[in-house]
Picture 1 (cartoon, rainbow, N blue to C red):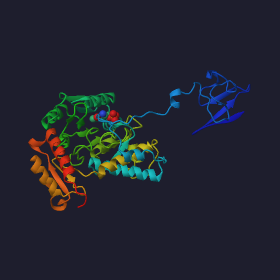
Picture 2: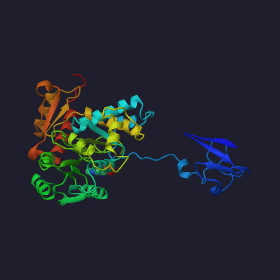
Picture 3: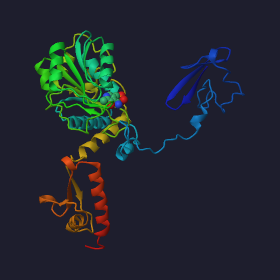
Picture 4: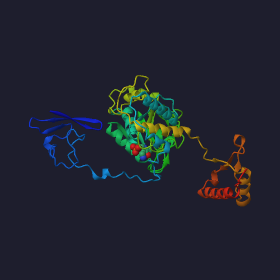
Length: 410
Ligand code: PMP
């Protein structure tokens, strides 16, 4: 006798043996069920065959009957940072199928956003379904074959992590080190390349364990001169500091979603140059991971121009959110750190405010110029004046000026 036991998203066939005792597939068999499903004294509230519930062995966890508690918190660590409202809104949208044309269009949008964020024209740009570590593992696993030599620049924890992963992949791992707080010069790197002759050089752009920014200028060119590829970890830097994947001759680069992109930890953007892609497709051995096989992922993400094939179920909602995070970055106007423009609000005469500041506080700020004339104030913060005290001083003075110079009608 067969009864169908229906749970949301699962149809479970329940079989009864000749003596009427139930067997249940998949799941625990009669042998480990504490009580017969026919037992009227079972406590879990009317659960049994045909009533729409699967007979779990243990009681449901009491805490799951409570509402989830998520405090409102300002996240100012090195990541995750708070997700932006548009990202959170995208997270509440209904699911699509992972190969539906509308979802494929969203994946295309994400690829365009990644190419923009990384400043690359490479077609081999996509998001790996996993956080920064997944992208790191994917990059190393695709670019390295067992026994190949990799040189890792280690100036904090992320170089150590890359060494660990490369070692697990069977690569011949060599390391150049700097103390915490230091960065590598081009001559440090060239010395390492000459001494070690690697096929791949790894470096971390933003070392989040020490807070050091590693300049990438010239490293790609140096690597190529010495016959090796350049792999960059920009999880903690991308979007926050200038990065030009093509112009800086970077062969492979990955980042994370939960930092500057203001998304939850999730799919991680990654891209490869044609040079790096060539190495991947000419490998002698198979890519060691199925899940991170870039050739399959490139097909699923529509990079290779072929019909998309199922590889794994894309994290639909996280991809929506990544799209919105990348859209936020694309919409941001690059701002000069040395000159800040502030829009003159309604009911103020810009000149009255600048005059007030100079008369009362001896502080000079400027009005707009050319297309911004009459519309903005320009506040310079550079060189000797770039201190927190100066910022406080000008903000306090401006606050006073805005209180005093407001007109009810202008
Ligand atoms: N690289 C760097 C520079 C990072 O800062 C981080 C995360 N702090 C990672 C890699 C790993 O990323 P995840 O924790 O998202 O796996």
